[in-house]
Amino acid sequence: MLTWMDSLRGRSLMRLTSFTDEEMLNLIDLAAQLKARRKAGVRGDLLKRKNIALIFEKSSTRTRNSSIIAARDEGGGAEYLTRPDIHFGKKESVKDTARVLGRIYDGILFRGFAQKTCEELAEYSGVPVWNGLTDDYHPTQIFADFLTIKETFGDLKDCTVAYVGDGRNNVANSLMMGCAKAGIRYICCTPKELWPDEAILAEADEVAKRNGVDIRVFDDPVKGVKGANVLYTDVWVSMGEESKTAERIKMLRPYQINMDLMRATGNIDGKLMFLHCLPAFHDFNTEVTKDSGALEVTDEVFESKYSKVFDESENRMHTIKALFVSALCDRAAV
Ligand code: CP
Ligand code: NVA
Image 1: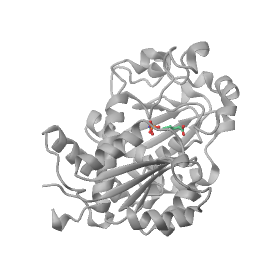
Image 2 (image 1 turned 30 degrees about the horizontal axis):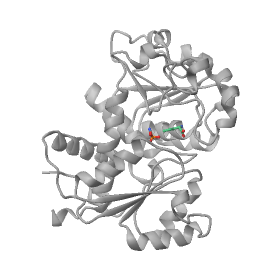
Image 3 (image 1 turned 90 degrees about the horizontal axis):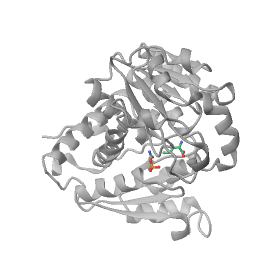
Image 4 (image 1 turned 90 degrees about the vertical axis):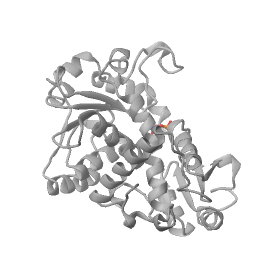
């Protein structure tokens, strides 16, 4: 018997603060239940006759495929719509597109540039809208990260997450708030130029204090990661910032996660894992890294026993499914 909170029905997710702390943690529990159910070979009909529009302005491997299969696994459907496919924001305003798609679909997952676009879709569509990444936030990623931490360490308690890299990008912003909400200590190791936005940091700090943990920002990664149980990184150049590539590689080289940094946690023989939302520049085989070598993480760490990145990546599917089910499924009718 699956259980989840009725309060999540019909709800949109703009950022992690869209949900209470309890709702966020409950959603991760639902994802664990759905994962176990799928591993047992059950494909249900929790999303039967539910259709989801996937509006994507930016590329995606995990979020796109997780959304499609999450819906399909439970008897629903998802349609992938990129900007060139529809009139979105060109011949038709976001507001009009929202009102059109809201009458056809049961929910909309949006990936794109402006957070405002996501909020406008939610305001006018009349159906739940989920943020599948904007320039500012990546909330669905954090559900998968926390499910992975729970699976590996048993729970989220007494855990310190150190994020190393671009401290003010979408993943870092959401991870900081997620840790605050879950009562996880958060350390951000980032150069002064990429310090988290003051307002976003202050908001997360208030939530962290309420949950009895703190947030600390360091520009020295070796000092910063001491005591960390999770070393987390993301690309140094997010989608839409490609013109900054050379500058960022220069700035962030000292923030690469390698075995020396893993050792600097002091937990190399204890409770320690490596996470990355992916895609990752860890080898020499991509267009970007053929001249520069590994960027934010070395191949040695990426391929090590500490690395849980493919569990994390798989968990995108189970957690997105939990999001769709909790928002769209009428439990009484199941
Ligand atoms: N982590 C993540 O969001 O991956 P995609 O960009 O492939 O969706
Ligand atoms: N910060 C990255 C995350 C990719 C999943 C980006 O926005 O490109």
